[in-house]
Length: 144
Image (cartoon, rainbow, N blue to C red; front, top):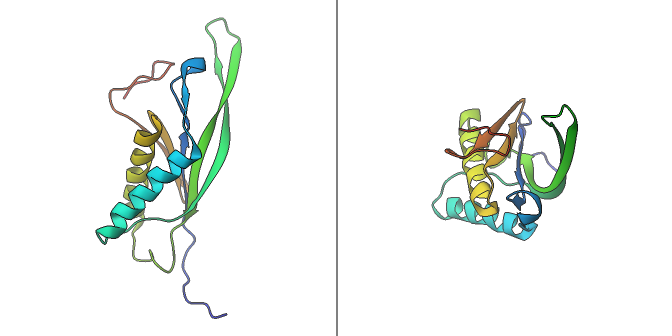
């Protein structure tokens, strides 16, 4: 085997919940729906000759806790879709970090829309950020 591409490792991950809504009234989306959204985004980019990122789609479970007004705590969990990978040293070596971040934000928005999410979590290299749909309110009252 001959090495045909080298470069710095540039890892990324986009994590989106699969549960739309809260509690027992929430709708659970499937990994197939997440994959369809990601593939659709990639194909739209590819057919117009624009850059896109490839990666691995994995199922996960986010576990969290919160403080109640009484001073006690509660916890919960929900299924998530995690799209992760590396910026290709062969096909995407020309992309600046800023361009990769823009692509990740765009993909996160596509996933959020398809999966009914108000927040999506993104990580790239040594940075992490949270995207929240404008004019939305979380169950704890956080708004954008």
